[in-house]
Length: 202
Image (cartoon, rainbow, N blue to C red; front, side, top):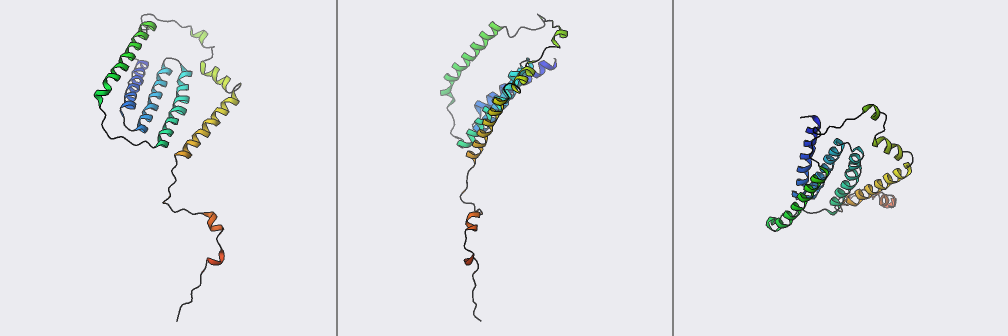
């Protein structure tokens, strides 16, 4: 077993297990964390098959923006855990239908694109002398992103930063039962009534 096959099996198994945990867990925060783990494993799979740009876009867009947004929304809504047991028999027809559709789509994709053909049966020869001078997808996209579209890149990062700060501010709960120092009231206080002299009887 080569290292590529081992990594492919590891990423695939972790992605499937994490996807099951997303559906089966009752805590919404834990489900979002396992969803982030699914995105990371899928990014690893894309990196193995040579799609570097899609892999890094998965990490930047899905993990860095969408999944974190899901996490902030779940924390802001403060969803309570429902402890009532679910009736799995009522969900069995819907689950069976979705499972049948997924297997049908996978089978049709396997037959059309021939996903399970071994590369050992039809080896592909690559002339590495000519490939050495070519630029990769990451180099070309990075050059365009940081030269021609640098302003749009900075604006999008600023919008994401403002959205993240807004989500943090909205999720902060202000407690009313905690005593805090109020500087405004201390500065506007009359100094004449601060000290009180009491005459004690001898």
